[in-house]
Length: 82
Image (cartoon, rainbow, N blue to C red; front, side, top):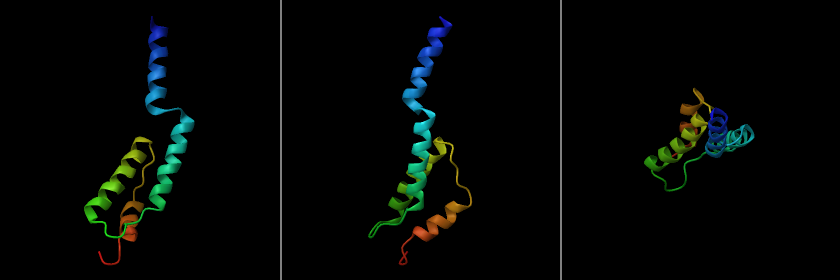
C-alpha cells in the first residue's frame, strides 16, 4: 500500500512540477524573459507591473530569486516618458 502511494505521489509531482530538466529549462526561459523585459509602447505602468510580477512569480516557484537586480531592471525597462 505504501509503495502504491509513493508511486502515485511521484506521478503527481512530475505532472505538476515537471522533471528537474523541465524545471531547469523553465528557469532559463523565464530568466531570459526578465533579461529582455521592456516597457511596451503605450503600456501603462499597471500593465508593466502585472507582466513583470507574472514572470517573477514563475521564477520564485522555480526557486530562482533575484534580489538587488529587480529595482534596477524595472527602472531600465521603463520608457523615458515615464
